Length: 316
Figure 1 (tube, rainbow, N blue to C red):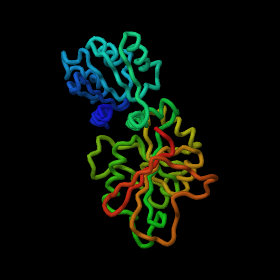
Figure 2: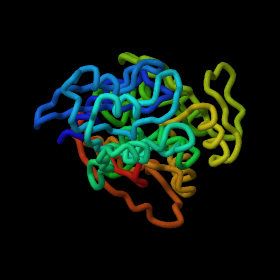
Figure 3: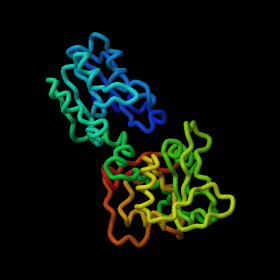
């Protein structure tokens, strides 16, 4: 439960910590929460320091729950491991190890060498801690962004409804704009560019930033398009985007783009909005896959009159 609280606290930094990961921390002493904190903005104190400041003297002899391994390096702020040791914390429970030991990792070893009892959680808490920073982890571990494919379909799996502009309702379309507001980039294929001339920006939501807007394909882009053409092989473009700071990529293209990414095993998560309609005809979500794609952690959520299906191809 306390690790879950640390993850909840970390979400307060969504949209302001980039390119740093989201981190939350909880300090418990005598069965009572005595301090909470999160990393709010790059260059400002990390979650552990904020939680320790809130705990004050009650941090001595306490247990700290932190969603990511405490850092050991001197960057814009001092190492969090040093703050934990100075505060007299006796036990540290960590959600996920830092995947970049040459820069920030090694906190577990430093703490254990100093006599601190350290536990790295497993199972569901570990999965939730990784999911919190799926994009940041993907860039460090896979050298590419975390890729989310979004689609809107009818109950019979069609991506268009004859005579209708939209497949899903207003609530679902608003959710998509919220997604655009927190990912680093949104992309479609050239077929969608030519057919719909999409803007791909986040509209009518509280967007702290606009995503980069991309088109995968050889082009050329239509005159006046504000999208950024990515004409190379998909895996090469994803590695390049990761090097340019893109941690999360939302795909909104049609079946051709979806099939290309799925066939290359480059989709990590699916978000499928299902509308209460039968189209009878039209394109489906994907076609021509050489083998079935098995999904995990399927979840359904009502969104207005529609249903959002969430599933993972890969663990974060």
